[in-house]
Length: 198
Figure (cartoon, rainbow, N blue to C red):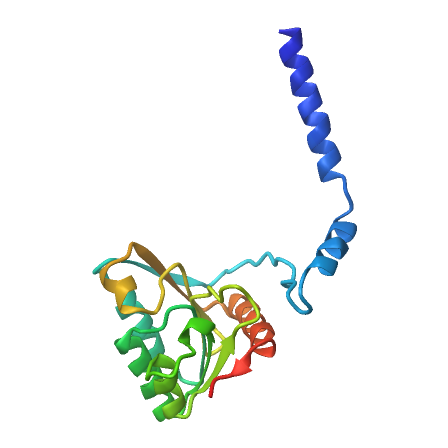
């Protein structure tokens, strides 16, 4: 019994010591080992008072429909961050949004940069600005910020496989301008580290 209490005390003391190290010094040491510009902004805590959330799942659920319907409802702007990007309904919805006057811009993972015709080519051919986020190992975001008010996020890649073969989830969070602002800031950060798709 005494041995167990002693072990417990030692573990608590070690935990307290590890937590007492200065967050500033930890951040600075991380800064020296990270590539320039590759330290994410600090975490934010938000209170969303009016937000409405739609959740959907795959395979063969309504995940892709939720994304397409959200794009179809955009009036001013859609900012996209995508890893996989092969879903024809989603890509077409973005092209249609641009055609009706919505500002559409996309940041994609470097796996989308190829010589063959693909989703990135489709967007570029529809006068949509596309950037490639190649300064990280994987640009793994699956995000859309819509009209500075709503956010699509979740594990759901914007791909046919995500809709038909994978177990995925998507959240569409409406009436959440504070959340949209944080995701927009992240979009701008990643765009500043990306290169234009040619």
